[in-house]
Amino acid sequence: MAFATLERIINLWSAVYITGVLSTPLLMLLEAVQTHYDNPEFVFTLSDVYNSSILYTMLLTNMMVYVAIASFLFSREYTESTLKTILPIPVSRTKLLFGKFCSLLLWIVTLNIVTWAGIYVVCGIYHAVFTLKEYSLLVAIEWFPKFLLGGILMFLTTSPFVFAAGITKGFVAPMIGSAVIVMGSAALANQEWGALYPWTATFFLVQGKIESTGYPTALSLGIIFMLSAVGFFMTYHHFKREDLK
Image (cartoon, one colour):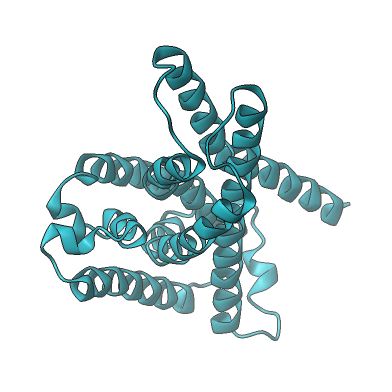
């Protein structure tokens, strides 16, 4: 019975996460339709749609979804009171934590791929009704590596939220933090200083805009890796010291 309940909860949350990331393709569809009616002579391509969608994926909607996933993965043992059952099992805490981070990476990369595929599908709908220039699977495939890279970089920037979820044993603090981060990312998306802000730097790296900011790529990568390492270490340190109270 408990397993069946847990399975239903996981399936429900999975549907919520998928729906969340599909909001990006839907926003792209609405924007395309609005552009068509507001300016019928304006010509844009599938590549243009993908280019615009990276902003939503990296900085806005998808980021908040991924923080929610991280919070769920790393706080559910506390919220569901299963930590006392898990910690005594003959599996090291390091392996348990590593497994959770692997699950988070898999979730983020998979949902980024879902977003990529969703954009292709909704653009297909638009193409069937209005005609979209250069609509082809080959164009979509050219953008696939960027969504894959984006997923990996976004995973690296979630570790501070994982730590917050572990410390507070819930969703509230990480989600409030993600809202603040998203606001900062939106503000710096067109600023040179964005190359020094980890969550915006990921967007610049995927779009190849780091060099145009005047900052070296190595500096942005170093900031991202440093943030990630600090978050991983603090999470590991906290989880290793966690007791069964």
